[in-house]
Length: 287
Image (cartoon, rainbow, N blue to C red; front, side, top):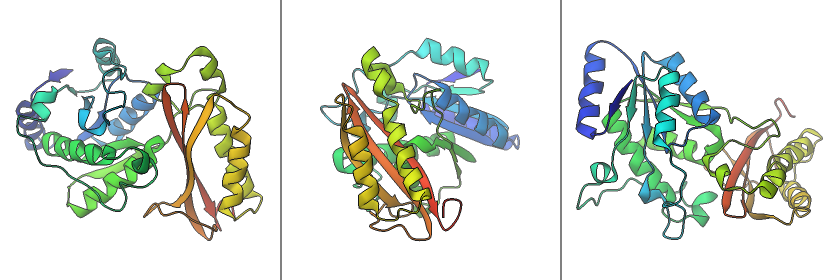
């Protein structure tokens, strides 16, 4: 596995792969890798000849009071995982390399970035789309793989790719969960032993919602109320939002009609802000 730390070197390497007729698959990460990440890497291997994984904790997607400084990092462990997975290149740039002095250019997907998590984390998705646009220009992938756990992020990146004509296919891999249902996340590291015991209730609330839809409930206010009532039994869980939205514009839905909707939740458990979601279909699998 090659380890590349400079953007220019990564670009040159990607150009060389393309000259050789090889397709490039890309998985952008912030490191502290877990099985959710490795599942995305496995998908990239299926779609491309060469797999590049970036490890970069992106400062511009964190707010001033958020967890940039304490975000979990373990580059040696990450390197071992990537080598075992047969990754061809680990791209590990510095902040100065990604954001040189005087950096003032940003990419923002308006209309999608201020909903759901964006309402509570101003500027977060501008930071995400800016770094992903830069990474796409550096790595020049044919295929890039993102996780369904970050559903809003995936929807926003797909829109950016469409609007800015990036020649990259976006694939969204399914959420990988612990045996008790908790969505895998690097931020799970923040959970205390007691918090970890109750964390699966977040996913259980989503399954409750899906069950209500399958039983014929179409009023989203009733579904959200049922989720809130279920989670109110857990003092440690502080719900930030529960929303049911369409999967194109992320607009709230009052009544489920034929088609697919996203049920999304963000909640705090101690220091950890956890997000999760589930998709439901009406008039199809669930209707």
